[in-house]
Length: 275
Image (cartoon, rainbow, N blue to C red; front, side, top):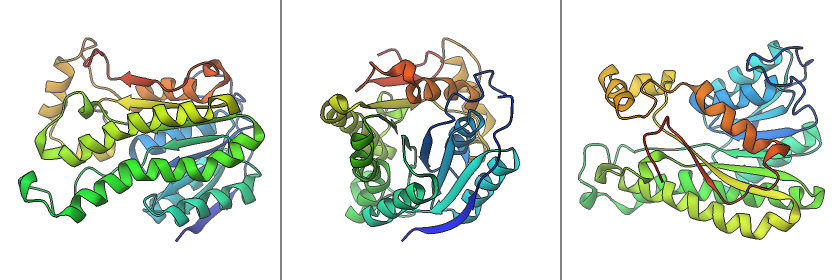
């Protein structure tokens, strides 16, 4: 069930820290899932900085509200909604709440993800119970589908929309210990292509964003420094990735500059994977 945690309006500030036109998305409304922290929060902030009203969706209600309050304090418009994206009704209710507050939805960023569960951590994949597989696939792939279901009719009626599904570089460099996650993120790419075919003639584009390992507070808590150092050495651009390195591609996919781009996967990892 969706619960509105915070709904606030503010005045968009005059300058964007990313250097883009500050009003680039001033007539757009974006829904960002998994936006309470990490890259999701960075996506929400970046869109808000450029004028978009942003609905911050996450199961972490308190942190989602914190991101929304931060956006408002900087002159933006934001709504925080506690949402489990694996619940179709909850996702639909969150989108409905966004439309009630801001009048429309133009952009959906399906960013919410789940890498592992207590039932799979440290357990060989061939011993996993079925429900552990189902839970990871439900958040990472089924959630993207539910999000598309929730926004597509509205976008089709308006004749314009952007759906960006977030996958993972692990699809190209898989490990058996994360087979459920890898499979789900691969499924996101297939889902994107199929949705792009169905929505293209309605002015709605659907693309996949594929970030590599990125330094965020969340990721720093999961991996020791040597993991980031090793990953950086494997890149053509041999340094750490930060949210600002991913945001530029996301903004392009949300903008009118990408009107003729759909069904594609954009790998943003500093040249680690060449596909």
